[in-house]
Image (cartoon, helix red, strand yellow):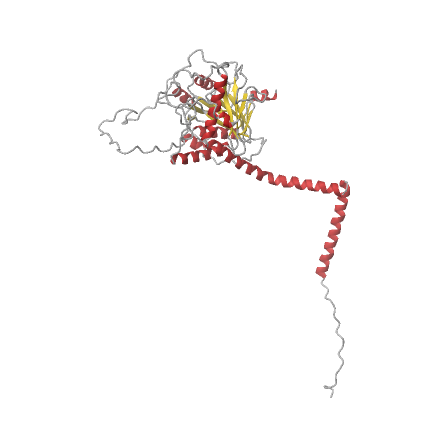
Length: 468
């Protein structure tokens, strides 16, 4: 019977389980938040209130973000400058516009100032948004006021015009093909100025371009200039001597000057000698040959002679003392390397080669359009009263068993001529000297400034002149 009688069951008590770990964590977070709030409140009071403290906090955030993003923006800006400079150097219209602008200014000033001439030009080609601009720098005295379409902005030795107007101011074409006139010019790029490229004519003035400053940046600038002048179809023949680039074993400067002392009838282009740190005797010989019109020179390191001076800092920015020409030459090396690749591809496709001087060099007789040098005019050199010292040229001795160049062959039948059209000439490769100079990797454009251990080609005399 007991199994059938219901028995009252005791009530069950429901209780929550206590987790000590979770409770400790919650209490710790609450205390931490309280401490942070008290600390922020104290700091805000010390800053002068919550508004002032918030403004200072946002300013620190902006400065931090800018500090971390500036290297990235600098790199992107550098790559954009390389692309812009490459487009300017590759385009044939840039060189044509520079030729026409220089010829137009020379033709306008020569009737009244025969000693004045244009030596540098800044080219900003026309785009869809603007008509472009050309600025030509003059050297000389008694320069007449500019005529149409040229104008001046306070400096009588700088002429400005739109790119469209300057393209029609040059001398008329000799053959009607749209090529620049036959007046020989050797244009050297100095870098970017705003959105344009600055070109210096080596055949005007002293014919010597002297670069000095931070050693690595100076050599990079000279390598870029030499490579540009030695592009396929270029206007000059580049000869790089020993000492310009470490590890490059070029010809000796004395031997090279001996071989250039006598004009070669087979030479059709002006010669540009690239050398480093010449001594006093070599400097005198360079000046004599340059004054005689036998060569142009690009010199690394300070020298005491009549020359164009360009100072290069550690970031690749150039400055011409006394002329006020400032450029950014940091992207010049990579831009010239890209220009060489694109020019080679264009020549393989059968494109138009770059225009250059024709006939023997130097030309016979004085150029009627070239100004007479005056020692008192900046950028010119007086004509030598005596003939320069002529040294015997160094000619290579032929090896035993080989005939001299140009000697008739004996015992060999003449090779048959093909009946079809002559094959197209292979594109002219870069000179081995310039190809070896570009063996180093491209710079990134972001370089440290003010490094105390950086070697340099400083010019103390020019530094004192700038400070004074």
